[in-house]
Image (cartoon, rainbow, N blue to C red; front, side, top):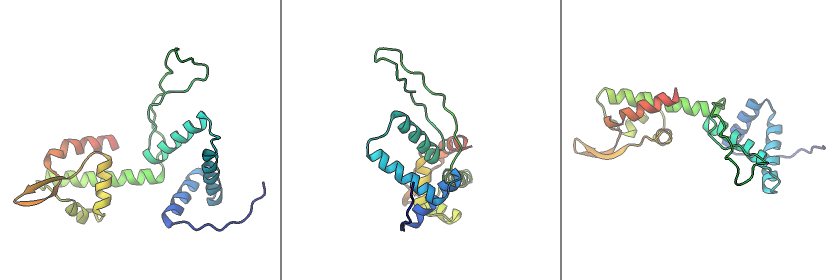
Amino acid sequence: MTLENTTLRLPLELRAIAEERAEAAGHTLSEELRRALESYYKMNASQVSFEDLEARFRQHEAEFHGQSTLIQEHKKNEGRNGPPAPIAVQRKLPLSIKASREQEETKKILLALKELLESGVQPLPSDLEKSLDMSSRLIGRRLGEVGIQAMNTRIHDKPGRYFLRSMLPKIEEALREIS
């Protein structure tokens, strides 16, 4: 295969993702970008087999969600009226650098929120923002991923979106799942 030099301008975030994945896979940035482009054009040309889709699905889950989920295995010789395919065993896959960083951020936020609630404070997202030195948007996104949201209410006649003490069991459950 003959290769030709091409200049490609990428946003910093996209380049960082490509570099991170290349490093994790033991590839150069060029190899990773070539693979991504080949994959993109191959999928768009409808040349994808079930096995390719399944492999890409598992890769996506490992990179973005940190674990595989239960999926039904495909059997080529199984008829429509035959027995259902066995379900694959769920197993943890290694976390990508990005996924493990996100998980650590979530854990840090949950621990800080738990500490505040246990000390009797029902904080606003801005209170967490100050104590954690993270944007309230990031805090909301990470907590939303584990099903925790601030509630619209009034405390001492001051309206706002507060994290309430009643959320402690859900926070503790989320911490157990992350650990």
